[in-house]
Length: 125
Image 1 (cartoon, helix red, strand yellow):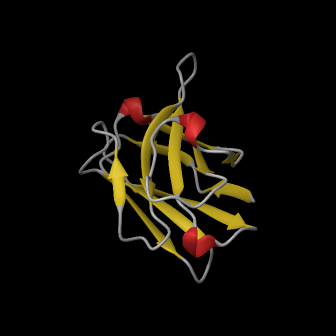
Image 2 (spheres, rainbow, N blue to C red; image 1 turned 90 degrees about the vertical axis):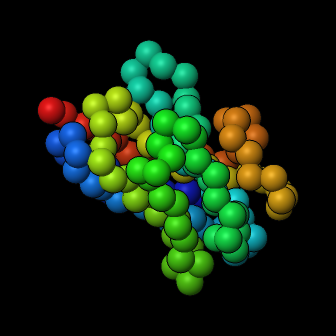
């Protein structure tokens, strides 16, 4: 399984940005995909996750109400829509997937086995 994140960039606080994660290999429609982020000097932080069907999602409290995860199974792509971006949203954003099918979405980095290379999101004032 390979994941490729893209769409990052530099935006102003309050702006919106959508990042994408294209997945190859595995059975995408069964695959949970999670989003994480890591700021310089910080641990990798859970952002949210989506089930294979797209019917279940979970979000970190820090992004709830501002970020939305969706997926297009026909395109093997998961999206992270980020609205009302804050300065502290600045980080490298990673998408990740677990090795096995499961019902539990997960939120800890060690619960995900395959990782994309990350895309930089920079929010400035």
